[in-house]
Length: 363
Length: 277
Image 1 (cartoon, rainbow over the protein chains, first blue to last red):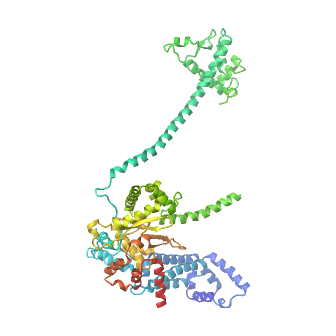
Image 2: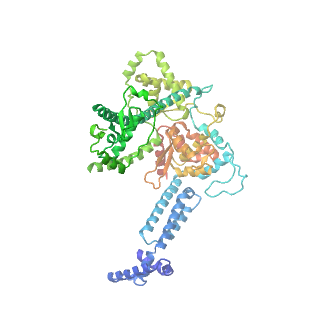
Image 3: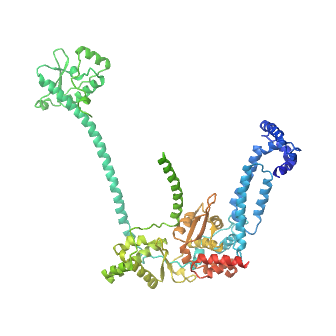
């Protein structure tokens, strides 16, 4: 049935459409295949007359289908947008839309377009139902649009201000006075049995409101402070632990220095022998760094021995103050992996005098 | 594996729950207070025996004042709030107190305390006295929002009790009130209509099921049912149209029907009209 009508439709309008932009080779190839199919199937008698190739081509023309879909969507949109106007009993827009859709449907070939048609039908049915419900009302019908017009008049709309005619669907022209809604409210007030809202004769104690609010704010601030307090302590601890690590290390090295010194107070301790770890360059650098604190704090002293080689010795408790700031001297020790190796060879260092801290205590 | 599956299942069902809950939340912000259980009459009597009449009177007065202040915004007042903020340790005699409060409102102020939701225990205050036309001007200037509310309630009423929101917005647009634009008097109109009026229980704003895109409809809220005189509404509408209110037969019948159980009355009306045809 549908095929037959399609065939009829085709004979009228099919030929020029086939020459459309995208009716190119793909379509032609498809047509060949289709022709083959038709041959296998034995062919429908009513399609034998008009070429099935043309038909198939037209059915699948994407541009054509897109156009139909676009038109359907426009129609659906316009129905959704102008819904209220379409409902108005004074016009026949719904019929117009349905006629338009009928025209479109004549060209629908595929399910996708048909789905859109169905969607439009749902909308139209819904509108029809609502239009019908308007008829149900006995006596006068109520038209919201007319109601709005009457309200505008009541509000004191000055229609002379702008002389443009009523714009269809939109708000009609004219100037609405400031107290328009007040007027409606005053008149409508008597429909409401609203309890008068309560007010203190001398106004309410507004001054009393802020204090509890402030209290709330204070309460809210309090945890904030705590949070802030936590943050710095955490940071301090981190710094402390870092400092402590350095300090501990410095003290540990001082302990080594003292124990070596008191083992044999007469023989000087060679600085390089003390500091250099033959197994690790970085440990050596660390030792130099930590030892420098001992010297800075006046807990150790450095001097050159007879061979003009640097030596290190702990400073006795009493001597610490005697050193004084005036006596202070600075020097920079540089060390590279290369010089580190040379020093190991020159001093014949086989073992570190300062044990790596990790082997002694964790952290 | 099975756990994950179960988790995703519960999640999807939760999502649905959240959506429906959201609309419940829009309709009313009630929540049950598990801390409060209605005391029995004997409990109340026992509680009353322990208190002096002056103490009970004072508590009653406090509740009256609390309700007055709470009513300023016209949002319903929850029993949970009354108990929590005022009644407190007197909760065992709550039924007696609220009875006395109701009596004070009726006999002293000419108002009526109505429990609009006996499940969630929510009260509103309405005026017992009929307001005469024009009289309100002397008292306090009426709120322009009343005008807006009147328009919406009128449309809903005249259209048989339920109206798609698009019809309301379309009519308001003709009155220079656009839901998308800031109104110089009402501000965020969409919020006033779908939030404030709904929370005040003047309107119900409910999603219409199975609509794509989403559509909502308006009905009268419980406060409107209590407060608004349909006869007077119809009179005003008739005055606007320069038409006899009785010419809207169905609406007129609805408006003059006894106020009890309005929903039943409306459905009876429609069936009557059908059978007449």
